Length: 311
Image 1 (tube, rainbow, N blue to C red):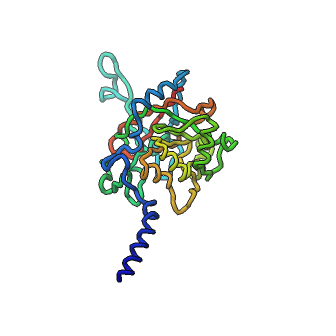
Image 2 (image 1 turned 90 degrees about the vertical axis):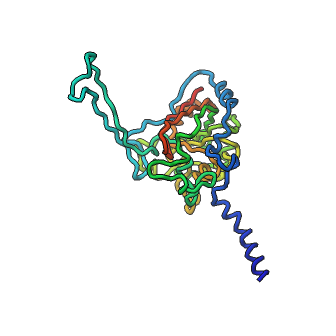
Image 3 (image 1 turned 60 degrees about the horizontal axis):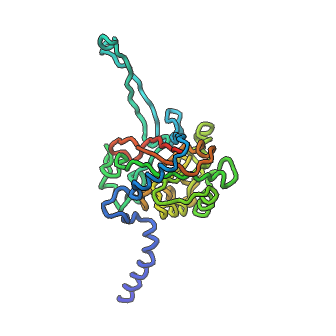
């Protein structure tokens, strides 16, 4: 019996590393942490980023979001605009005030978007080992809502992966990892540092208007090893000009959205999708000040955003 017990314990020890790979481990920032890698932001990082501004040129990194935006199946966008009057159709008061109000009916995982930690988990366990049952509510999450993500003003780095591969647009399923990231960073003469936001230009955004179905269904993107590497450097956000950030078809079909799990669930790094990187790439921009103040809608797991780059 003792030999059987020892054998069982040995098997459990062998299995533990494999199980750990699929688990949402406790955060290195503390048992109660909800901010993840955003803890790497600091006033010093903001001041250093401000010193990168030389020309004052401002780039809108968000795409226009509307009814024709490419969306994942099941998501939609619509807006209703109504006139403002005195209730009877006439202008208001002696000043004849008139105007409009609007009602937006949309998924917030549409257009250029920020993913919070409540978006993707591992077997219903999310960042810092928090189970979905402890924060998910149909009328809004009670933890990890995007309204609690810290405002960001830090250094942004653009890695032009299309340029690295010598193409205008990467092929779908192309996954770039540590070797490719290091090579692209070296070519750009930048060193990725703690507190950075790293964006990838793949050229894939061109399909958003010409072939929106293909734009969503397949795409190039970040690989699992690349995600682990970036997280190890202490970056706070990773984004790309694609709808999923990671490569589709997936590197391993048995592990869909493993890059999301690696960044959001395991390492607390936020994800940006559908980022307009074309203008930065056209200007050869490699580093800049990155600014983001997301809308503070309570209880959402994603947010439509318009990040700003300033050079």
